[in-house]
Image (cartoon, rainbow, N blue to C red; front, side, top):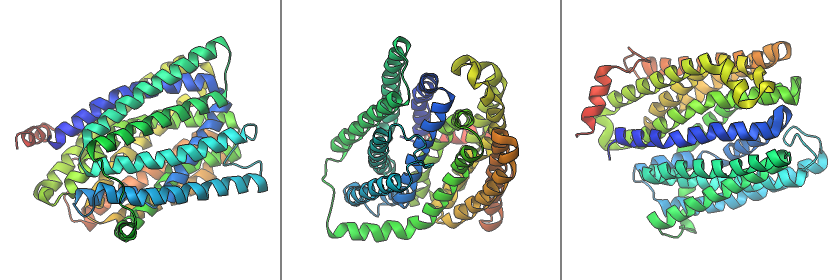
Length: 438
């Protein structure tokens, strides 16, 4: 199957996930309320941060080395098994020790249900790492049909579980504990799918022993710069949440998290484009047409995001209160502001792929470092005075700075031409159409 068809089918498979994501967000938000939304959002970001911090970029590198035929799925799975056990144990000890020393902390903002939150964070961390490993294996092996199916299954399971939960909530009001349990059930079902998919497609036991050491050397030599880049990128996207928590109230955190989550639903367009073109552009056989393909897909991505952002901006004032309740009208302004910066963030996701496949990941690290400097500077300058509105504008400054840096690298450091950055053209369409026949 050609790259364009893979992206098309992946984007189509994102549609049910997008729709279910919106519906689940509505249902869970109505159950949680503004303050509960803030607490659950912080717990979710904690899991993501720990996963990124302790993952060392290994799964990111795995897809590249599998695609370039330098390793294979059983070897990656062997390394992943050791890494999973070590990280999960370390995280459990850290969180338990932190709770004993500092019961009221920002990592677990609600002390009422620590045991449940503790179990949720540990299990979700472990299973998310497992699914990330599986995803990298299937991406690198270009087994995209399993990735597409996983999105559809996730959408169906999410909607079914949270639909039932909301029905129960209408009979007798629920709270954050119920949302945590429902989220845990969804993650467990997703993990079972990936385990079954691996058995069907590969069926080989993880390779352990001496091979693990070889895989560590191979992957870390490549991934360490990308790891720090992704870590800084996470801070660019999420640090403002914790600063908003420090300077405002949990309900304001809830409003801001809703605005952030709604804008980042557009990543469901950019992430599959970036993810699918990566193994193709990393393939040596693809090098002669690498630049032309990359630029066509970058413009396709930018055009789609631009159109969806305009639609979102126009509908926000009417749609957000209608779907999430009048209590969340406060999220409209930061949502509209964030759409501006998110457009550049989505473009940066695709530009970063070119540095990745060109083995120039250091430029992604430099770009995210610039963005983090902007994030920290403007967050502390604007959030204390302007709250979540200031946080949204600070994010825009950071996202735009990252984009400008990546474009400058593309032009100056890599010596490539720049013309049309954002508008998908008829010649792009013709080129991609012809690619399907080759």
